[in-house]
Image (cartoon, rainbow, N blue to C red; front, side, top):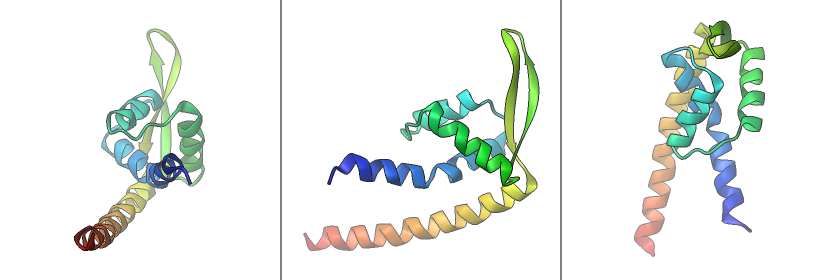
Length: 113
């Protein structure tokens, strides 16, 4: 078993929460989302982010607006919808509980080794 595969699956599992968090603050361009994820060491590529954005848009958790660009064609800027904010709050609560539970198990395991 390669540990890299497990690490990648862990990152993928929290991407929705992270994208909803980023887009809840302000309308953002996908490359800005990628930059924030990379800065947080949640490395993803465009091939991962665009399908996720489309899925969240279809689920009506995100919306986008076209904004004119000085350097090219108009760009889509994504923002959470009111339903997206509700889901984000739910996911944040679930993440906090999950994080505490996992940390408890990890701490208990570390104490016995």
